[in-house]
Structure formats: structure tokens, C-alpha cells
Amino acid sequence: VPRVLNLKDALSYFNDHQKEVITRRTKFDLERTEQRKHIVEGLRIAIDNINEVIRIIRSSATEKEAKAALSERFGFSDRQSQHIVDMRLGRLTHLERDKLEKEYNDLLERIAYFVSILSDEQKLIEVIVEEMLALRNRFNDERRTEIDPYAEDISDESLIPEKQVVITMTNIGYVKRMAVSTYSMQHRGGRGISGLNMREDDMIKQIVTASTHDWLLFFTNTGRVFRLKGYRIPEESRQARGLPIVNLLRLNPGESVQTIIPLDADHEEGHLLFATQNGLVKRTAISEFKNINRAGLIAISLREDDSLVSVEFTRGNDEVILVTEQGYSIRFSETDCRAQGRDTIGVKGISLSPKDKVISLVKVAASPGTVSEEMIREVAGQDMQVAGVDKTSLADTADNDMTDGEAVSLGMPTESILFVSAKGFGKRTAFSEFRVQNRGGKGLIAYKPNKKTGVLIAALSVHCDEDVLLINDKGLIIRITAAEISQLGRMAMGVKLMRFRGSEIVDVAIVPHEEHQSSADAETVTDVDTLEEPDADLHGLDSSNPVLNTGLAEDIPTLDSLHQEEPEDS
Image (cartoon, rainbow, N blue to C red; front, side, top):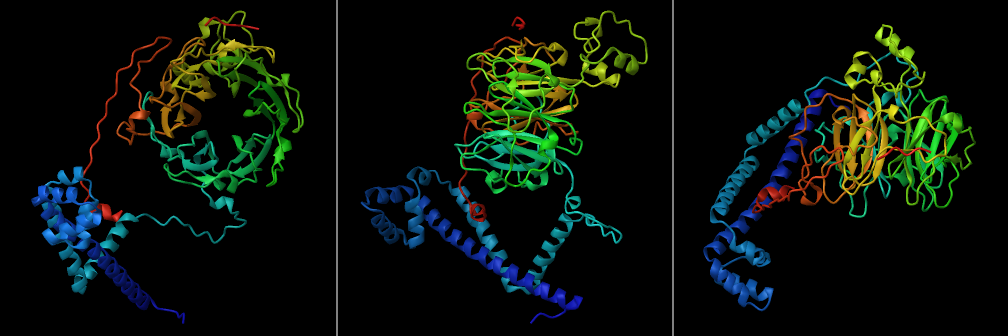
């Protein structure tokens, strides 16, 4: 019968419960330790008579016959003889007497310790006190819950901490979120750290950064869109696979999420610009996506041989760049695309060569090479003699080129476009390298893929003081500063961003910079199949590769285991 207890009675019941828990745990540990001691005793006898033991096992026709012979000759119990018979001969012959003796003595000490706890109540109380002190020291922080008697109109969302997170989704539809701080900073060209454990038939499909309070728009291969808050994505550890996306969205059979777009509170007015694999673009007012129910909405009509690649938020007068897998790009104004409804196909954005496809849609940011003359005068606080300069671009005026450091010192933006290839190469290129053209042309060469670099897999706008996350198809993730990536021209191949072998980069994300200690000593993956030899920074040259060798070691199990180009215009 439930009853109200005073503090003394409550503590008394708690102490009795702790005594019962420790007693039952100690009995279990004692039983397992005695079982292991019994096995080790048999192994000690076997190692002293190893030749005879091996002879008996080899001469026996069946396992049962071998067990009987060993028990008769050495007095082994059924469990001891079974353990010896189950061991491979190679492992049996490599048993070391010193290690067995050390383990045997350790087992005797453990047994004596467990017996003392069960036989002496004072010893039992000492164990409880020791564990309680360890808990106190482990959770010795201030109370996190604040009681506000005057708070009114508190929503459930306001109780959820707002923080930047990384959201990953795999090819077969597992999704999860982690704190951005999960990934420590590494130097460019590192191997990365494991991002999650995946099945052999699965791989990372997309990685995005967002706030837990952002709306996430999920666009599917059938052209539908769904909406969820960032905190609705389950938070998991680095190694966890996550939750199947079908548990969160009402997807039809055969329907899969193609891209995820985060939208914060600032994205209430403007447009969404869509880009498809076949080079079509479409602009739709974001107001048409404000009321998305659980069944989703049609966002774009797609032809059978086409799929959605990217979606960008624009404010009505932005410029964008389409980038293809073979390194072509075209820059045009979003006003070249008239606003259309949701259930439409769109218009041609770029003309594609055979076997080429669009991989990215990048919104052009104001960078040192694309700022106005008036802005430079205003920021620098001085008159500048600029002759014959277009009001929207200083790209062709060499005297006004700026480095990241110079732009930062003037308080000016330093965005550039980041290109990343499948085999881990990348570069930053100033937006000023890409002049505005008419929508629908072939465009300019932005990157020249080759066998060493592989095809382009991503292009993104990046600021020099942001961080870049790269993830390959084996789930390895590396975080580097954008400033470490060289800013080069359109024809350059780039530098090595991530080292691996037998895999490819599958996605890239930009995250805010955080001051981290270099993770040179952080956990790295040492699977020989995932590593690649170090490469020098290459801007268009090849280099030979040395051979990588690794070794393996194996320890004998103990009780611990029981607890466990030329520019081309158009």
C-alpha cells in the first residue's frame, strides 16, 4: 500500500535497496569469476601437457571421444574439456604460461574481494559509500532547471535549447542529428573520423547544418515536399545509424528524400529556386510552402528521367550559379526565371553535354570581387580612383583584387565558391571569376575534373571564417577551416582536402567556425581499405603514391571480456 515517508524512512529504504543491488551484483560477478577460474585451472594443466593434449585431440575420431579421453587422462570436468576441445589448435599451442598464471592470481584476488563483500556488511556499506561518492563527483554541477514563477505562455518549443546541429541522411533513409561540436577540427588532408556505422549496402547521401528550431523542408524524388522542425530529428551518437525517415514522413512506396533545406525565421518572404539534374530551374514564392500538412505538398513536377538536385532560398534580386558534374557553370539572375506555381516543370537553366548533369545550385554572395565601387569607398573611408568599372563587378580590375585578410580588415564579406571532387580534392574560387550570362547557355569552365580528382560532387558558397564538413561513402567525416583551402582560379585542380582509398566524397556542408584544439590525436580510422597515401598540394600536377602497410595484433582473452582549361563561353 503506498504511503508517505519522511526523509529518514525514505533514506532507509534507499539504503536497503542499494544493499540488495550490490549483493545481487556481487553474487553474479563471483559466479562468473569462479567459472573463469575453473577454466583457467584446466588450461594450466593443458599447457603443462600440451603435446599429449594435442595428440589426444588429433587421434580422436569425434569431439565427444576427445572430451572423454581428456577427462579420463587429466581429470578435466566436462566444462574444462569442452573449452579445450573448442579451441583451435593454433591458439592452444600459443598459450603463454606467464599470462595464465597472472590471470589465475588476479581471479583469486577478485574472488576474495567478492567473498569479503558478501560476508561482511561493513565492507558492503563501504562499497555503497564509494559508489555514491563517485556519482556525486561525476554529476557535481549546478542545477540546470530554473523555476520562474512569473513565466507565462511557455510553448513546448521554447523549452528546447536552440543550437546548431549536423543532420545526416543515408541512401536507404536513415536520418539523425548531432551537435556541430561532435566533429573536432582537423587539418586539410586528414583521414577524418567515423561518422556512423552503416550497413554494407548503405552510404551517406546528404549532410546539412541547421538549428534545432529551423524548419526543415524535405524534397522527394517525386517532387513532393514535407516539413519538420529540426528538433524532431532524433539526436544520436556519432556511431548510431539513426531513425528511418519513413517513421517521420508519410512517404509513398518507392519515394525517397532527395534533398533537405533548412529555413530559419528570416525566410518568411522570398522565393525558392529549384534546380534539377537535367538543368531545369524553377522559381516559386516561399509563401506557397507555408501550409504543409503531414501528407506533404507537390513542390515541382519532374519528368521521368529527371530528379531534384538542389533548392536555394532567394530574395528576388539574387544571382545564382549552376554547376555540373563535368565542371561547367553558368551564372545568371534569378529574375531570368519568372515565378511559377508549385505544380510546374520550370525552364532551362543550362545546356548540358552528353552524360553531364547538374550537381549544385549556388546563390552568389557579395565577395571582395563582386562588391560595388561605392561600398569599397564607404568601407575603406577614402576616395579610390577606379576607371571604367562596372557598378556590379570589379572582376576585371586587377588593381582592386583583395585577399581574404585585406577584405576582413576592411570589414567586407569574403565569400567564395567552394568546389569539391569525388576523390577529395577541392578549391575556393572568387565569385568574380564567373561573369553573368543569359540563362540556358553552356556556361564557363569552373573546374577541370581528371582521373586523379574524379568528377565534381559539390559546389557551395563559403566564407573564409567558416568550417567545412566532408563525408565519404564509408561514413568518415573531416572538419577543416575554409581558410585552409587555397583560393584558386577556374582552371586549377585544387588541393587535397581528405585522404582515403577505395571510397569517394558523397556530400559537403558548411558550419559556423568554432575554436577547437587540433584533433591530430583524435580518434581516426585505421582500416587499410579507407586510407590513402599523403598527397602534396596539387594545382594541376600528378604525383606518385607510396604503398601503405599495416599490422595486426591479438591479445589472449581474459575475464574483462566477460563484462562486456581555356574559358569556354556561349
